[in-house]
Length: 173
Length: 173
Image (cartoon, rainbow over all chains, first blue to last red):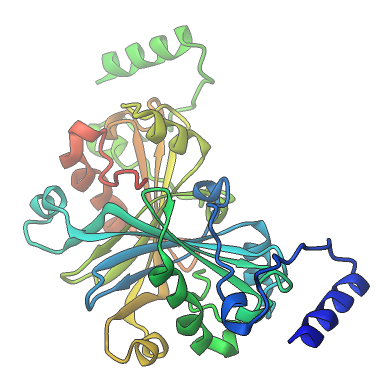
């Protein structure tokens, strides 16, 4: 493991990246995998749209997926893997019927974003998050980071989208 | 009718607005109501998110609703009516199941934005669109303005949301 870390730091130095202080407690794979995104990236609500999504099942969620400038540029250029600095935000809301819209349409057909449920982030930093595919995962509810249960699900779930650098959402034109 | 028009022009002059040339053909209410938005506002794909929406019924549409800076500011300040210069864009896509996401979830539950179907705009200009609540409506498919059938539906439909200045979509936090 240490050899791997040494190699990564060397590579990072060659590439001219800023040095990152690795916390002393992070030695094993499992612990290292627990480097989560615990601070909400600033300004995310002003970011541009990547796409929208809806999950049924137990979620009934409505998502607006936004990206920072690095993310949008990479998407538009079709660049994979996403470069360091990429941040993708999934703003989740309830998927609720709109009574007021349905009245206008004269039938139940309209669904809108209900209350905000959570916001999830993927932050690309190939050094800091080297044990989780270069991505840090974060889950926030009411502005506070979720507990490990939520945080831990990010990587194994997204790791199933390896061909797309762990990102499910495709760019909507 | 001409009296009304005169008044509006006078008011506009007092308010210091830029003069608008009213086409000679627009004399009756019906014709005047046909001032549509026929040019796609530039840069709309970079605008910020207002909210998301989904319509069932005959539409099966997924919408991302974006606003220009004037729109976003008005929304965030809860300002009604929306000021002149507001533009709201509804980017419509098919609401399609995502096979690749469903594989990961192990069940059919995931819907994403499919092919782009149309883009609709509401442009606030209280003089230019005075006969349609101050809003101009536009419908574009493949970058081209829709025919009158589509264009004409905008105002009578949105006019049912009078309490919200003809705008259905609420701002998602």
